[in-house]
Image (cartoon, rainbow, N blue to C red; front, side, top):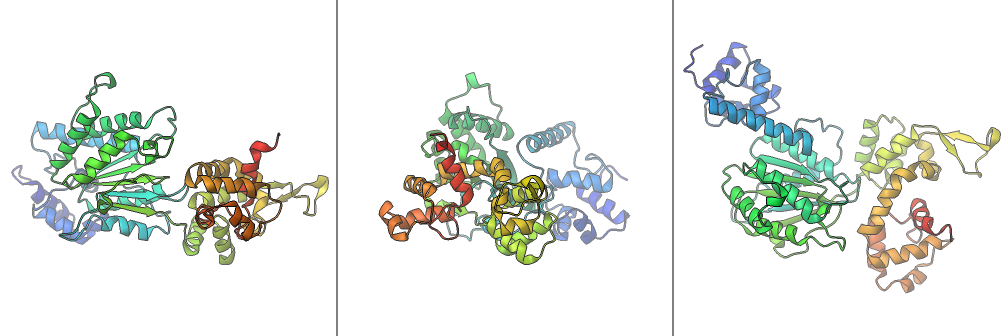
Amino acid sequence: MSKTKKWNEILRYERESRGWSQKELARSLDTDEKRISEWERGNTKPRPYYRAKLCERFGKNAAELGFIEKQNEVDTFTNEAQQSSRLTDKNTVSFWIDTSYIVGREEVLHQQLAYLDTPMGKPRVKLSILCGITGAGKTSCLKLLRKHLAIQDLHEVYSYVFDIQARDKTPIEHLDIFLAELLNWLGVPQPGLPKLPPLHERIARFMKEIAKKKTPLILVLDDFQVALEPDGNLATGWQQLLKDLIEADHSTTLYIASRETIWQQRERVFVAETEIDPLSEEAGVQMWHNLGFEEDETVLRQATGKCGGNPGMIEIVAQHVQRPVMSLDWSEAPLENGVQEQQGLARFVHNPHYLSHNLAIDAYPLIEQIISTQISLEARELLNTLAIAPVPLAPALLRNLSQTPGLVYKDLRRTALLARDNQRLSPATRRRIRAPTTHR
């Protein structure tokens, strides 16, 4: 084959020599035939993601497919691939990971994608915030978004997951690390921490770099709650970065997932905030099926409700109900030695408290997080009263215990801390709140 052929001619030759149609090649690459046609006519060039897939599909290297002509292009291609690989390994899951297990989040995905297609003349969403408690599915929504963007191949995507285990780091230290890695990815080498320029200069350099981007840039940041101070407010440095990002004219969009609301400033016209809702019963049933449960659909719907529609809690319960559980409920008819072995999702639906001890290790950190960060001080004070009440308290009495009972009820119901009668705590919540006082 002549070396004078252009890369698009080579692609067409390789496809036709194998007897493949554009549609067949597109299907094997998880794209559409319109994109194949654009490549073969030379109108657009495959991005690194598709270059790698084309090399694999044709059994050729990048040079043989005409993607590389000169040595400096070899170096650029190699560095770009290595950089993308390091980013994927360190900060995110690869774009082509299987997301078929994620259910009930199609509406959230469509809503987030719509922000990238703003009609001409209308303000564009530059900051989209996904909020939800642990286990709600924020990370899953971001995975769906990243995979869809990779398949579209219309944007540059940078994904980053903050290290929430690094509890000794301040919000500004997290910002320093993030900016250093992001600027390096943008091709702006950064010195070590002792030689770092002032924060405002690094933010200005970041804004300068994204302003030069011809291809829209998408930033996807998970576990963003590390940017908050202990009082719940966004740290000053992060405020400046987000403020500059919102006010400037550019094509970059920032997607953030956080356990807590982070934006309390103005410029709301450029900001979208989405609260991740619990799974519907239908989505919950599908998730139970994905986890290997074949019980009657009524049982699966009830189990979804018992878990508050929280995907993380469903996974925790699924893990435990498949194991034998030693019941300490003395009201049950005991077997020999007063111990009864029980298991199964139907048993959990009938009496979810039999798993309380087993779920404590996994579920209590979630409840602790909700109590400490997701509800108001007045709601926490009411929790203390409910925790020691042996019976449900009358609504009239509860109204006297709170100046804003409507808001408090909304807080407690939203975070699934109340039992179904709304005047009583769920058993797991009661145990968690009373635990510190048991030795008094």
